[in-house]
Length: 194
Image 1 (cartoon, rainbow, N blue to C red):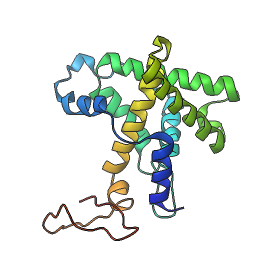
Image 2: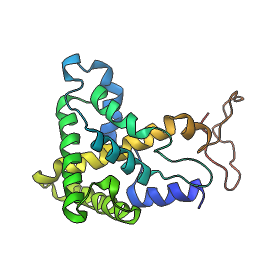
Image 3: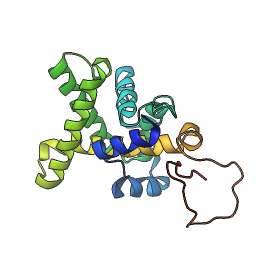
């Protein structure tokens, strides 16, 4: 399986467009008061879980390394702590805790320690729960739905902003020519990073 097929499969499985809420937060985070930053702390086990979730969302393929290799597991908590208001940091954290409890309840171990097939199964279910939450608005599932949406968005953002994402997963020219928005792509060609 090549990178393009993997991302297409993941896009269908998880939906990888960045939500309007995440875009809004990222563009307005420069106004975040200092007292709002770093209101949550992630344990080593939680950081490993975030890394493994990101790696399921964007896995390693023959053509390029995945999210784990790109350092997305460290990018996500940094973005949450530095760019999101305290209330949203707490919601993300609560969703992560609920997700880990679900893994431990179902598989008797942390998400990071279960086999890949079960990881994919859990994330597929989490995606479905998030879609259901958008329709039904269950108060008890707000945090877990927010966690999935933000996790998906920040995984995509972190990966495609990384050196690996820009130079190996996408077509890259260090010194590009003039911009041509209608430049034709060859069949199977990667999208442009520059």
